[in-house]
Amino acid sequence: MTNIASNLNEIRKDLPANTKLVAVSKFHPISSIKAAYDAGQRIFGESREQELRQKVEALPKDIEWHFIGHLQTNKVKYIVPYISLIESVDSLKLLVEIDRQATKLNKVVKVLLEVKVAAEDTKSGLTPEACRALLEDGSWKALSHVEICGLMTIASNVDDLEQVACEFDEADSFFMELKSKYFAAQDSFCQKSWGMSHDYRLALEHGSTMVRIGTSIFGERQY
Ligand SMILES: *Cc1c(COP(=O)(O)O)cnc(C)c1O
Image 1 (spheres, rainbow, N blue to C red):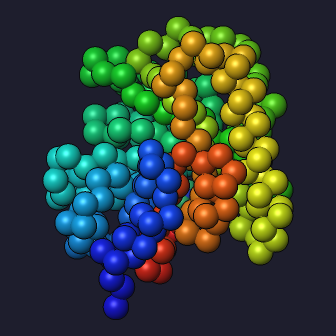
Image 2 (image 1 turned 120 degrees about the vertical axis):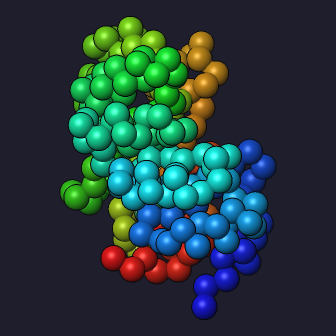
């Protein structure tokens, strides 16, 4: 049996102060989230809009929900009312739609840009070139109801730790490039979301400020 509370405590021992832990609860039941909540966890990550909605309704209101999966523009309106951070923004079109829906609700939605630095071809996100182009274009600056708070990335799922470390370093220097070019005056551009169950310790050594951990907290997902 998975002991969620003790898993959480083990992970917390590894985390430097001010590092955020996102408990990735996708595909896990409400009872598991409740167990983590009772152990003090307040930030949870989900990757599917409907599943998120059901969980939001069933669980305490002081939970901070992060959206971490691929997000279709037509689903944005469903999650904007209750999302704390959308970590997976991968196009200007999506950013524009988040701003549009947030404007209707008179709120500002925090987002991360998802960048693809992994050598593996299957990963989602903006390439660094596409991300530069998006920011260079400048039209995002007129979007007053989204706040870009940093970057998210997923490293290659390989055993070669050097490769994974290289990818985190690449994301880290890309973050610094964008920070100095576009966000120097914006303190809220400060989050670097990388590191999952198998690579979060390494991620913390390579600039991460936010780790997204599912399996090591909740056990294997039942798809
Ligand atoms: C599922 C998922 C995670 C968590 O993965 P684990 O290996 O279970 O820790 C983290 N980030 C994203 C984007 C995910 O989709």
